[in-house]
Length: 227
Ligand SMILES: [Zn+2]
Image 1 (cartoon, rainbow, N blue to C red):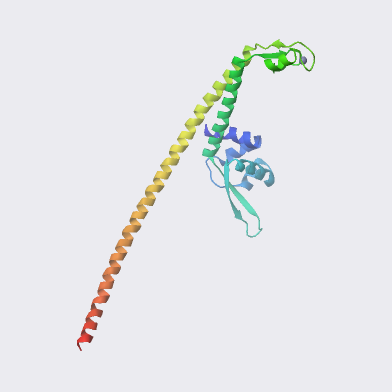
Image 2: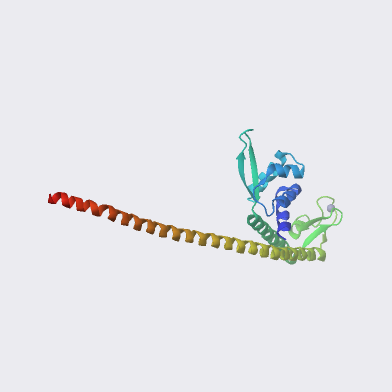
């Protein structure tokens, strides 16, 4: 499921070839761009152009290494799954809202159509031109196409369904991320505690050492004073 979603957003952002990149990067980290170019039979510049596009939207991140011998950089790419799915979610929300508005205006307003040009206009527009087509002079007809309404409703429910699957995947990713962060926090806490203990032990030892060093010294001084 995740790979399909990623595929959709990546293709929408950077074109069909970018979809192949998802397959190569999914579940991996720091993938060498030369490897991608070779596998997709593209030049390194073509591959980089795709990656730059994706990077502009935060869908991938990179690190680079300089080849000391040849003096050029090689980029290593990682897919940002969470960000990509979030972007997809945002785009779908916009799309659904757009469709809902269209549906609402279809349900509340009337539209006219020229049957020759297949051009549709709003009622205001039709009225303005006395119900004749600007292109061919044909008389406008009231467009009562129930199919348009049905199609819009269909499209909305299709996207809504798709969005449910997407939210589930995003939820999974966030739970995993939370677990990882918790683990890291615990590890850090443990380390801090240990460091503190070590420091205390060290201080104790130092204090003990100081005492041992100071005592004979002070005796000597005292002895010297007595003499
Ligand atoms: Zn016309």
